[in-house]
Image 1 (cartoon, rainbow, N blue to C red):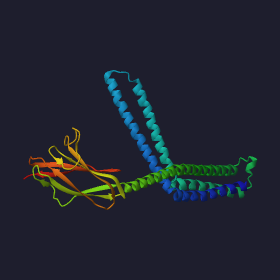
Image 2 (image 1 turned 90 degrees about the vertical axis):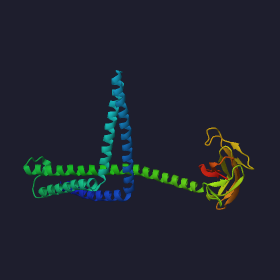
Image 3 (image 1 turned 45 degrees about the vertical axis):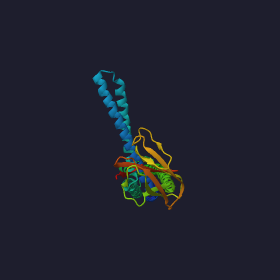
Image 4 (image 1 turned 60 degrees about the vertical axis):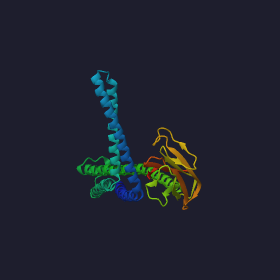
Length: 329
């Protein structure tokens, strides 16, 4: 019987060493995975709960409307009951996830199984000491008080040993689950980071154009019915090359872009039927200004008018930017 006590004690001590090792490994190797899994589980639970609450709200509104109209409401009630069961299942799932993460903390991973294993070792040691100091033969079905005490101590020791072993098994099971979930979450984060890096790289290569007027103070002042010039330049501020570069100008009724092919926009354009022309610059290299001159013939009526321009090239188009032209003598 001494060998049985020794095996119980040795198993308890060995498992004590194992739980310390398991805890250290779980903290050092699964720290990031645990956090990723915890966040993913929390987000999934929150999303499921929000969707369910929205569904329940809609069904309750339908139920009230049906009761007011006197319609059949059995189907709606059945759907509400199903959603209520689903809500309880989500809550149970959340509690299970919370318990899993508690198992990997010091209390769940070390303290609880450690106490059980120490208790098992102490009980087995007590049974061994009592057995070694008496002549009781417990395997001969001796029902004396000492024999029953020895049996009780050893059985209690074995039960606590199994309890500690089962707790270690639960911790290892959670570690396996967290490692898989956390690994998937970490892989997804790496994929998203790679996508973002590729997107930023492509955005850095995408051409961006810049437009500036030269030597003129806004608003431009032109004499009624007399042609004037507006000078401007365009450059490439991002990207290496801009292909098929064009600058479009828009003007209200009464204006004319001298020397340019012009056309009118649709009725729903602002301003309606705006006169339009374009300046083709074709290919541009980064950092080199392309200077151009636009000849504008204003209407004969004195006023302040809004004109606009827009930049185009392959992979880029700007917003329509407005500028003022004052027609006065």
